[in-house]
Image (cartoon, rainbow, N blue to C red; front, side):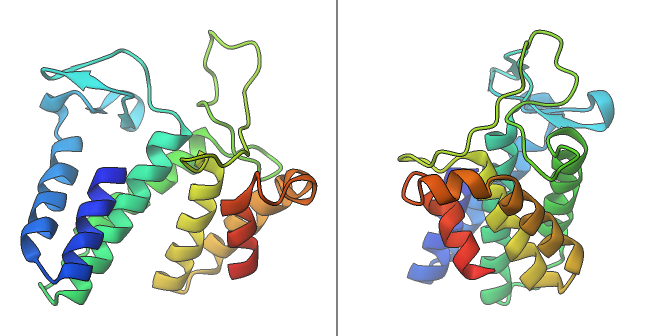
Length: 189
């Protein structure tokens, strides 16, 4: 997801459609079942990693979904800016992944968990709020919802972002720098 987003951003900034083509190819590869990163089990899910078309066996975590959505949003924007006849396919992929995030990672109080609901091998479902060199899945997902709200005008995305921000407000209050990406989302909302 990070690479896909970076390629799409390069295409936009450098006005070079080769990068956008590669971002699209990489995105398509993720959703090809034969590559092992997309599983049709349980209505579809991302896998953590794959090699030679075989999944590692581990399901994707919130970070995987959040960064993939972010990357697809960048491709969607770059395609729109390049006037390539954006067919909405990337945004449809975003909505599919976002629905899985809501079903598998969002708690009753709007909080985001790092792992899917119902994982049998976990004693506790972790909730990472710390943004380091790479932002945490929660803060990336909040930004994704804000971007989706801006692109569609749908209030439900803003509500999801606000619910997640409310759920981590204590962490933001205690350490705005440690939760810098969430703090930035708060300023944008």
